[in-house]
Image 1 (cartoon, helix red, strand yellow):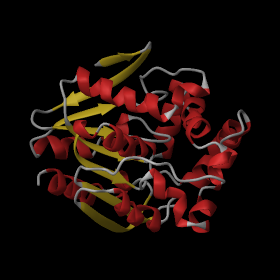
Image 2 (cartoon, one colour; image 1 turned 30 degrees about the horizontal axis):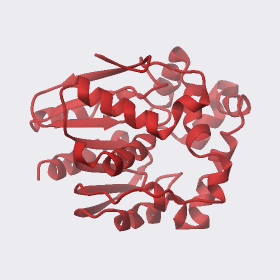
Image 3 (cartoon, rainbow, N blue to C red; image 1 turned 60 degrees about the vertical axis):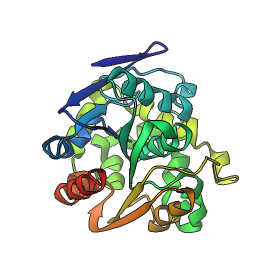
Length: 270
């Protein structure tokens, strides 16, 4: 299915019947990331909506960096929800998808039933965790350099991407990036939303999240500290739940699918 947002087509899949759940992926993935979660949620009685975020997969890929700002990403998801007949939904996000999910829950609170953020905490607390998070975020500065970042990631059979990211599904992810021309659009998220100035003046202000919220962090994450997730509680006015998974890396839904599925079904069914 496809939703048109000011000329940018956002492709999405809908599976199952029941209360709607929207699953939002981040860099460098597509909706395919959630292939282990969709069947579990459908079996639990949910209608699962999985978009390819703009720039990825089958969705449109604007060339301008300014086409990847947070307000436009939020608008894409709300348009998909509208097209799928979901006036209100549970929203689950990972990586950049988690950032978008936080923004939707803050700015369009009436559209979010429950919120689940995997890996990435609230935008206001992301850099507030101090030097450790800044140190882990070094790649965000590299990604600002157009052409350089693309070459660094993809040279020598994507050697740096493989070594740095440790993606558990690297071969298929790289094939998808190449086939769909998604590398530069994916990097444009960083260029549009976290320019270098953010390191000097961090801390975005959003209204507190009213929805029941669960944050999940995995101890093997190469890019994110536990503190940036646990501190997110201060930006949630509704019920807050925190879960830590010991062992998995950044892509917990691929490395520990049964654990992630169990958490999602338990929390979203409450």
